[in-house]
Length: 225
Image (cartoon, rainbow, N blue to C red; front, side, top):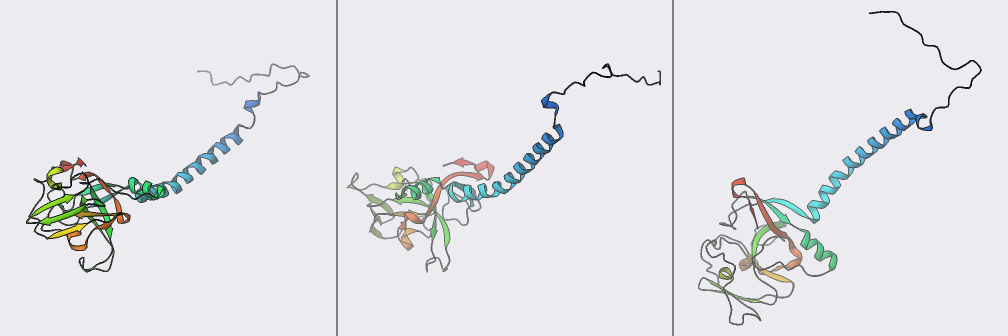
């Protein structure tokens, strides 16, 4: 291989003006610097916005919870990991309307400290909605009966909801109560091992955090509600 280097002389004549470079060839280094700066700024913005977005989603859209205790057996087990949908409650706050979940919905709500819970602190509980505003609920001789305008003779919500085979224990309490506007009556599915409205009365709809959307763990028991 020839190791000599051949110097190519310019083809322009001595007095001939040099060619003008196209405009897009000018300032290429400045363009690269600007693109690099934009990339850095975009990355920083994403890093700053990501935790804010995550907090907003957790506060207003959905949140993960872990079941603590046996009060919802056999539907839910201790240590089950759940996804609770909060957006419905968020929309009700925006619109100013009361948030009333459907009968049978499993909800998470805040229970402010009371003697029944043995604590002065707030606790989040998970129970099932049994009676709605304006309805009368009667619990007698192990049977739950709900009365409303559509069912003046009363009906068994456990049977109507198809959860009789899910309920554990007997409902041995004696209750006869009419639910006020803006309140709902909740009970655990493990009827003789649940602290619920039978102990502390109906709960305010403003205390509802959200409704159960899905169980994600354990994977073998994953389910949409």
